[in-house]
Length: 240
Image 1: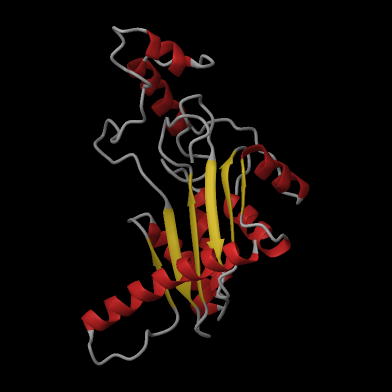
Image 2: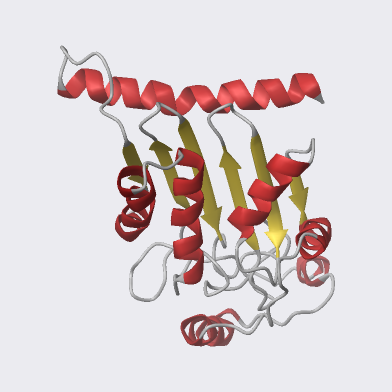
């Protein structure tokens, strides 16, 4: 466990440092250090996430770990196609969430396939800070969340997600039948093979993605990162 955890810590921690150093070197060859604090998030939806994190970093002179968690919690509260309980469900109509977080000492925690819990990023942090484990999935992740005071939500889909799911069901002809993949594969005339598959793009042309990833460095030079997602819309239940 200790060897594996050290490997995960240092291999993951090295990537942001390498990326930041390359960006700084290309933009200004004479620059010797990154100006602190700094926060970077993915996608245009990362702008309000940055604003939340920045308030902790700059206005409150806070810790980078608190900043990335706060940013992730913000978008988990937002109605977004691909993050949080407001996101699109899997093909059985259940929203399942994944999240991971890492602090400045390369401690890390993560959850996957977590249902009915609003803030998986905070569950991941709790796992990191109170257990020797790196990851919990599915039912075990939910049991851990409930045992640590995270409330269980209803699981009711947001209006946007419900509409998207119903529209997808009409086109996909998917019925939530046990072992449907095996049944489909038996028919020689079946063209869907193990489908229906999650679409690469939604009807409006936007891509079916992805995660909200955030890294931040505070004024003390501490680097932390967080990632949270509901995964691809209409994915196979159980897929992260």
